[in-house]
Length: 252
Image (cartoon, rainbow, N blue to C red; front, side, top):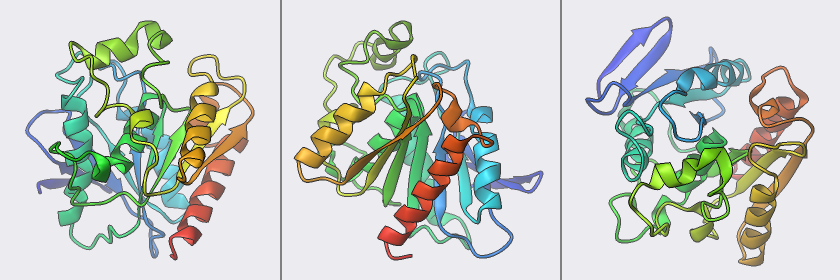
């Protein structure tokens, strides 16, 4: 897999498109595991992985290997299914990175990135699709104010979910709510005053998952839609605690 060094960051290219790459950053000492940071922006091309760089830096400071993932979005070749193809391929690219232990991989995404992070964790359940056999299985997912039900999110972001799905009306393979329950833990960190993606998206997902025998937890924090991606906020400190707890649950 082609890689290049840029300012101490390994740039991993998983395809030929300019948007098909990720930035891998490692801590100085032993790594606690890999966190795949999936940025949000309602799947639109105007938002990119620069949103995830402050989180990646904080993760590295706290002993994690951070993989800040870029992908094609609506407006630059993305949407359904291309965006999902990229998220799957981008994570699977970690399997061939020299010296990387990919046995503990947590996906963490904000807003539309939360949708993609939880979707990626559920890939083994997508039988009959090209996404169903991950080379790098996800061991847990953290949704930060994530869009977890595409049906009830149709009015959010000026029709962003419809634009993402395009002409595809069957949401079965794209909607995290259709994959319930996953075989891995899911933690939903969501601010109570979020008026961009309402906390009901997380509440419903957690309730349905646990009712179906899965492992999900709602972590309520104070603030708005963006507080969860502010590395200086109490919401981010709480997210780091969630990461540590997940690490303990999988025996690391």
